[in-house]
Amino acid sequence: MVFICCNRSVVTSPTPDTDSSATKAEASSTESTKQHMEDVKDGVAVHEDSSVMSEAMNSPEHNYAEFCASCHGAKMDAFVDRKWQYGQGESDLFKAIKFGYEDDGMPAYGEALSDSEINELVIYIKEGILNVDQYNFDEKKIVDGQFTSEEFTIKLDTIASGLERPWGITFLKNGNILIGDRNGKLYERTSEGELIQIKGLPTIKEFGQGGLMDLELHPNYAENGLIYFSYTKPHVDDETMLTSAVMRARLNNHTLVDKEELFEALPYSTKRFHFGCRLEFDREGYLFISVGDRGNRDDNPQALDNHCGKIHRINDDGSIPEDNPFVGRAGAMGSIYTYGNRNAQGLAMNPVDGSIWEHEHGPRGGDEINIVQKGINYGWPVISYGINYNGTIFTEETEKEGMEQPVMYWLPSIGACGMTFVKSDKYPNWENNLLSGSLRFKYLERAVVRGNKIVHTEKILENIGRLRVVEVGPDGYIYVGVEEPGLVFRLLPM
Ligand code: HEC
Image (cartoon, protein in one colour):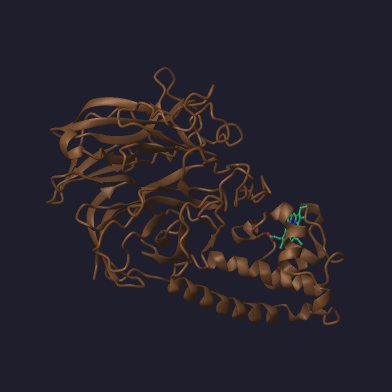
């Protein structure tokens, strides 16, 4: 299975997991695992120590937790997502565990564990590695711009090209589409397919993870014409200092007018990553904003005196709602709605109950989906399913009192980016499904949501490109934006 569903400690209306397709998926994955275990056993038969009876053995889960997790991560993350030094064949693993690589800091376990236990551990780790292989879509070629899904065939309709990295997409009432490119260019795409560049944007710093980011219309856009956008803002006195900011403006003759800055994340930093920057209005008209930890994971996400590593909630004019959870607490930023978030690149309102969902990047392993709930601490970096990029761990803890468990997490990290619910009846059986893009594995993940749970997932649009943004238009079609080359597609169900 791709995902691991966690026990949620805060569940308002749990719905039983009745989705039969989920059970089917589980059954078939158990089968392939069994088959795989047999294959692996064959591969290491030479090491088999038949004198050890199975009753005397500890389970590989137990041995892993006991002997390996402290260095390699609680969930085998290091193995699922690593650059192998000594080979990933069964006998390579066996050798590493039995004899160790003392010079590298890898102890030898030949005395602590029997050969059979080591073999079981090898199988256990190899199963984990399958998690990565399932994302290897290299074989899959895109034929005629068409993709298959469990329900129907999807045809791509290219609606914009010549972009770099489309990051925000929103739909004007006249049928035109606003497309923001990370490089600071904002376009209005006409129904004839022409891209008209919008003038009058503020100063935007653009590079890797920063630039012009999300776009959102005011819920009453038809009356007030207000467009909201987030971007990377350089400090007025020192342009090496950067932050995430949100502005609103109106469009007049392809120029932004009436510009008002509503939000600026503090403190500024010279770090050039983890800006967050997703925007979403809820049904009551509050604007939610994600801000990443700005690369200062030890100070920012768990402290309430800064804006970073948080989800914020503000009124449409930038003022702070009085019932925000930390309003009135000394030293706390009033806009904070949740904290302990790493770098959320997806925010979407669930059309079924109006709740706001987010996904955020973990480090290696541990991209999470969470439901944004008032005042909740999502635990970063105290608890995490991920490990450091260099393969070392920074926390052994995946759970802690007072810290929320994710609805789901991805192992390995898919580089989740862009999120929406399918508020549409154009796609049979997809209504209210949750869609998340993947930068790293270049596909779209569809999740069937029941209440507060994800009961089934499917990978679609494999190899489409680094998928940065996904939205549903007022016409009911799903739109996705991919990077380099920057293209926007409309998904036509066939
Ligand atoms: C004290 C820390 C520590 C513990 C405990 C530990 N390892 Fe390691 N292990 C390392 C280090 C350090 C390396 C060297 C490679 C690296 O930098 O990750 C390594 C390497 C390995 C490799 C080779 C990886 C490669 O890239 O080829 C395997 C396989 C492995 N360990 C398995 C295990 C298993 C299974 C356990 C538990 C029985 C375990 N290790 C326990 C620290 C540890």
